[in-house]
Image (cartoon, rainbow over all chains, first blue to last red; front, side, top):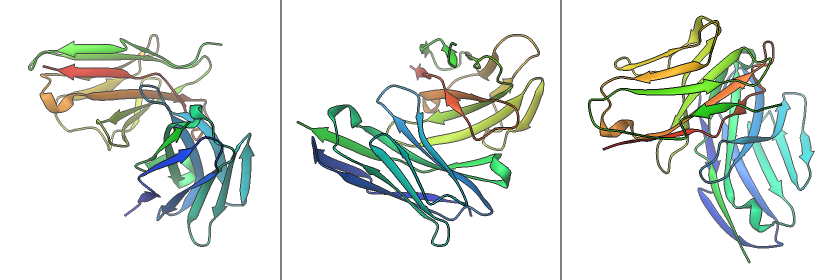
Length: 112
Length: 114
C-alpha cells in the first residue's frame, strides 16, 4: 500500500534555531516528491519539488534532500523565523505524477 | 495573475441540506483537484477532473458527493444531505496540462454542518 509517513508529528523550536523534518514513503513507482507549507487556515504552498535524480534542492532557508534508495526525504529549515510556524506536508507522486499520496504533516511552532 | 479562487470561504449548513463549493482554477490551468481536510488531520485526495471529464474519483465517497468541471465556469463540489461528519476544510488545487505535479492550492472552503 502506498504510504507517506512524517516525523515528528509536532515540533517546537526557538526562533533562530535550525530544524529538520523527516518524510518516509513506500510509494512505487516513484515520480516526484514535494514539500508544502500550510499556514493555519490557508491552503498549502509548494516549497520544493524533487524528481528521482535530484538529491537536494533549496528554496531560501528551506533545503530538501531526497534519498530514493532508502525512500527518505528531509526538509531542513535554517535560522527559523516566527513565520515558519505552520504544518509541513510531504507529498509523493507515482504513475508519472498523476497519483498523489499526502503525508499527515509535521506541525512546527517557532517561539520567540 | 489571480491564483486559485474558492468560494464561499465559509459555509454553514444544517443537516440534510445541500452544500455547493466552487473552485476557479488559475488562468491557463485545465486540471482541478479536490481535497478534504478534517480538523487536525492531513489532506485527503477526493477527485481529479479535467474540463468535462472526471479522471480519478477514487477518493470520493460513493454516496452524496459529486464533482464536475464544465466547459465554462468553475468546478463544483456538491454534497447532498450533509451530515455533521462532512464538516471539514475543502481545498481545490489546479495544475496546467502536462504538469500535474505543479499543483497550486486555493484558500479552501470551511464547511460547518450544524
